[in-house]
Image (cartoon, rainbow, N blue to C red; front, side, top):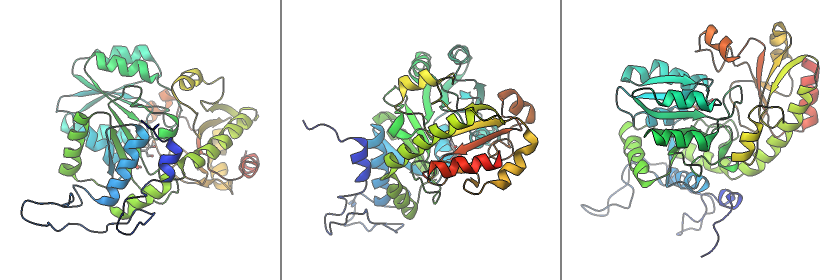
Length: 381
Ligand SMILES: Cc1ncc(COP(=O)(O)O)c(C=O)c1O
């Protein structure tokens, strides 16, 4: 048997060899809603693009291989992917959920899923004992983990939590948006489903909104495939192609982003105007050792708290290299104000309790020259 290809090789050649008739290197964009049938009762394998489309399939197969999963599924956004996964659950189900997760996922649980009878029990998933207790609550059918969390970069002990969930018969879903399969592979650690905002690192250029699910087993794949078609929040062919093109350079981008992030986090941690820095690559970060044991890198997201929250507007307006914008994972460095932007749907009391305070800023570090990035922060701080 030949050895499986490394992820860099798989991704660099994503979408290649899919058009034997012409030999096109780049996966063709099949901009079609429907496919003609050769005869009654026959199909080319494609019937209608909500069910399957060759360009989307190229992306989905790339994602499944990168994650070593059974099948991948591409959706119109990360939230569409998560929404589809939540439809696996019956009304009356409870889900143990990371408490400081992306604000949009919180909004989905509170303002959309709740009306279908799904109740979220929020827990600090970096606290294994708290998760163990929550999983014993009646009606718990799933564990939804975001790790590292957005925005505080807390780390969950994935193998332990996944085993605990399995012990009570709950499905484990991991949002792996921040680390990607290049750094962390939750399915290898036993998770049932991994979800992504593919808008972020996977696509990597802030030019497409997309989501993904990868399932570990054929049973989960069958159920997600049914829901993907039944609900229909699929990714279109043009956007599938953009995501596929982005994936080709993911390993290189992430390497540079991570290197820059490590330098910036260290620099911030020595800055007198900075009260605290949250970056799991710093040895003092409480999740540093756990992440080291279950991932092959620390990612490129940093949160930090400035001494004087009153200076936040001047910082956001003063940056010249960082862009003040709400997203992450692209080649361009962004600065975000979680309390007002990404987490605006959480009540102030909850934000205060979680530590998402008025002085907290989040950086998504890009691939620019790190000296330019540090000089930009120096100027505004
Ligand atoms: C960790 C995480 N999960 C999910 C989402 C939602 O993804 P999308 O914006 O593609 O719907 C985001 C978006 O910021 C995110 O940061």
